[in-house]
Image (cartoon, rainbow, N blue to C red):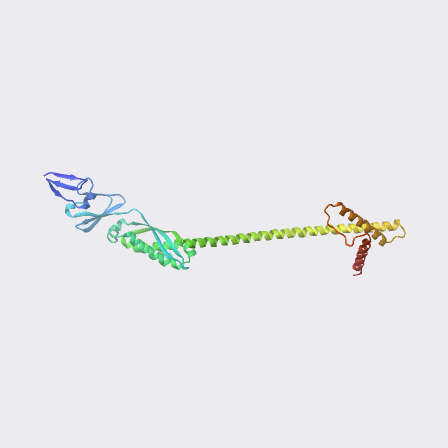
Length: 311
């Protein structure tokens, strides 16, 4: 009897009598009734539909004619599930929490991971959503941003507790982002910008205040020094006038101090008129104007001096 085995079509022929091979034999290797399991993968072996053992990576005998078959393969590689959960915070702001769950099946519990869960990702998503929607509503928006690690830790603890019974290990849980509504983000940016503008305005006002204080201190010092200079100037003028009056009285017998002061005032009057006339854009005006007004000015000065001396 001649047997012909076609690895591509995966069926036997024996003298024109076709024999159909079960689909489970598609994982056979080069030898008859053998199956190959890839690295970082395990295979679940069944006998007549009943679990028998977990096949580790390598080549294994699989006598399909005795009811043995590979029910399926299970990857032991690290897998990642990215989720986006919508919830709201304590201050009634709706946010989208983006989480990444890194998990893998345990080789020693491969039968549990294979048989107990039909859809691992859906189960993980249900647990993650439950924890996030229980944790975030207890926090204000700002606190949610600050406590992302606490939320991730709570999710990881809950998943670890639930998924260990199904043969899965939770390696790490990350809260990647907390994304509020676009209007909320714009409002937060405006609040931040307003706060920064307020700080800038305070700093600018403080700088202007310092400039005004320094300018006022400078002007005060300048006026003080100017006053000192004017006082010294007037003291020098008084000393000079006194010496002039005394000298004039000695050299011209019969003259009094009053006559000398009148003459000095007339001299200064004409000097002033000379300076005003020499200036092209002078706007000074003497009221009343005339030589006789000098006597009146002298009388006013003399009366003021006498009153000051009396007081």
